[in-house]
Structure formats: C-alpha cells, structure tokens
Length: 171
Image 1: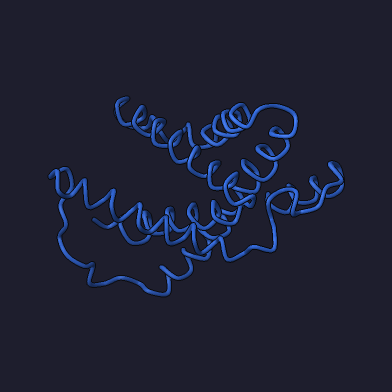
Image 2: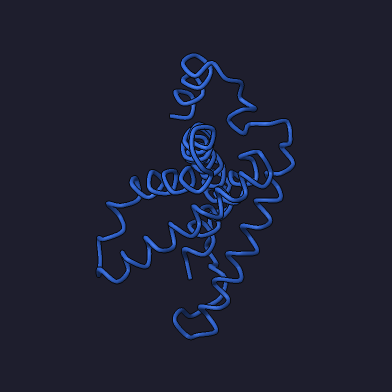
C-alpha cells in the first residue's frame, strides 16, 4: 500500500516525496517515538491508578524475537497509514483548502479502516474508540503540520501501536 501511495504521489501528482512530508529530517521520527512512549505510559498509568485495569507483573514467557518482529511490522504499518492519511490526504488538501478541513478529512479517512473492529463489543467501547481515534489523528496531523514532515507522526503512530499491542497487550 505504501509503495502504491508513493508511486501515485510521484507519477500522478508529479510531486517530490518531501512535498508529501518525507523530508530529510528523519530525526523527527524519534521525537514522535519518544512522545508515543510517554503518552502511552501516562495513559496506562492513569487507567491503572483509577483501578480500571490491574498490573499483574511482567509476562515471564515473553517471546522477545516475536516482539522484535512485531515492532518491525508496526513500524511499516504506522508509516503506511501516515503516508496515506497525512502524507497524501493532508498535504494534498491543505494546498487547496484550510488546514482544519484537511485535518478533518484525513481524520475521517483514518477512522474508516478501523471502523469494523470498533463495534465488535459493547457500543460504548466503540464510541470511546472513535473519540480516541479522532484525538490521536488530530495529534498526528498537528505533528505533521508543526514539523512540516510526517516523520514524527510515523514514529508516534508506530511506537504507540507496537507498545500497545506487543508490550501492554498482556496487562
């Protein structure tokens, strides 16, 4: 998907990858990754303190190789979603309309692929999931606008998903 998006941007839109937000400022990836770790730890700590989840210790039989492989997959997955939503949609629309309309459209398009899994259980959890996706999508978009690059959003997105699934998924 990322390859198709990059080819579309180069061949159809006839724009450089830096115009999509894939700039030379790759270091911003690590700013996003660190922000993702901090936000996730703070979020989970707050939920633990409210008593809504319990911490039962470190998982003793963790497959470290599998966790590393999953992290690699999440790096690709997070970057692909950011290339599509912030790279193509946000950058293309912000040239033609206001930044807030571009952010709104990219947010809706970000939520759509997640929609089917949101309402598998109780409706209240689906609604909370939609609100969370709106908030995180706006954060990804604001990072992209702030840094004039999608790297920070890629880092935050990838590390958020990887830690949430591979590390905190066992809480």
